[in-house]
Length: 147
Length: 396
Image (cartoon, rainbow over all chains, first blue to last red; front, side, top):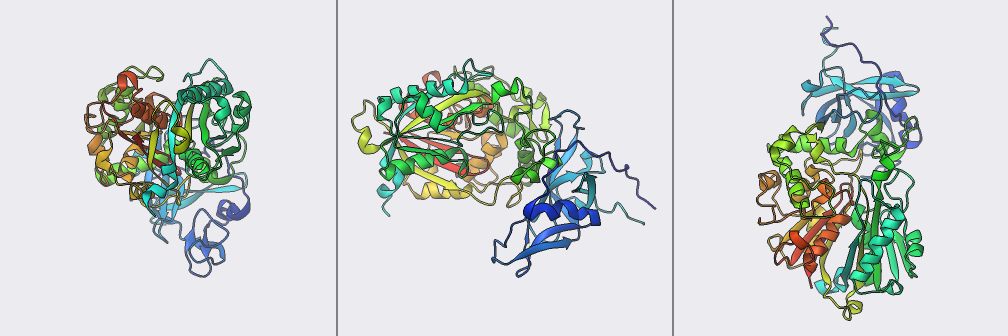
């Protein structure tokens, strides 16, 4: 039984990131349905945004799959239409990935009413494709409950 | 090290200037810059040929439009200066970085009188580029660098980032919109006595609560106002200031910090800034205490930053700044800590930190006119939302 949930919204008006350098993997891994986060091969510390080496132990790093589960660390309901065509309101948020304290990803919380979002809310990754970019967005955890 | 050996103890502030501030202004950014700089030089009792150093923050930038339209080199030519030392600081401790560089240049003996300025032209560019205030650059282009972690998610304005901080601060400490709004109401009350301020009509907390929500819980009145304008400040070696007509302002202490903070690089739980270290550094370099501060100029690009800074600079305990400002009486002109006496950026305009330093100097020179805080002897100035600088200034 699928939970009642609005259908995936139309892709938002967005300015896309340059897919380049140490961060390219982050924007493209969603093509395989995965969220990849830069991690140290030595001490296994996760680093986001990605860096070319581990700032804790100087070890080499590589993209590593994570569960995609997180909690909302903080959020704001944006109501200002900053650019033409921008659909408001929307939730801009920092989510803390479950793998490590303070491992934050800036994102949108989507597929739920904006008023439902709260600090501490469990969420999971979902992807929105625009061109070759797979933006990691987050939706309330449990959307696939009963499947 | 004895505190009198610190570099800032060798340096003082001898003059300040500020151009017309407008939305838009009647002159070009370079003309505004010349006005501010020549006014500061004259205010110090100096002549342009005595200025042997010049710097600015952040240096000329083509984007975002109007953010920094004027550089040190063209200002040097336009003002007829012949400096030995020329600098600019695109990175570092944000607004305070050029001031810190100027102090270093003077203290190390490279030059005696440094002109520091900051010019903004964000109002006039908005007339033909409505979204010049946004973080992502031109629509349709790809986002590079640090902004790429926020802009693709339509974190288009710095207000979105500080919305995260405000929401988390409210939740953790039980702070309210009425408390946060006291910062905005105070700014407007102060601005009423500042002829150069943008918004001079007072507002009430009810007006604040009725104002449009931009990004919860930040309202329109929580956001500063883009302007055209320029501010200039002269930093002189204390030995070179002895012959000047007016007692200079002493730099009692400075502090700075830069940490894993910035767009996409957040630390902690979004309820404090890595500015704490700037506060600790500043207070470690002086015998003065937070209770000695007579007037405070606390960065207010967004009102929530003011609360976070009040705690970082130890004027309030952690989590208590919202209750401290509530109702506005403590931070008003007759209160225990008159704050943002020019109106701050929320009402006097986004002079980007330099308005705060300028106002601290006016108060300590006793030149703040109708808004003068009686017997102001010590002022603290803190600037920055992504990179942090603090100055403790003392009447000479």
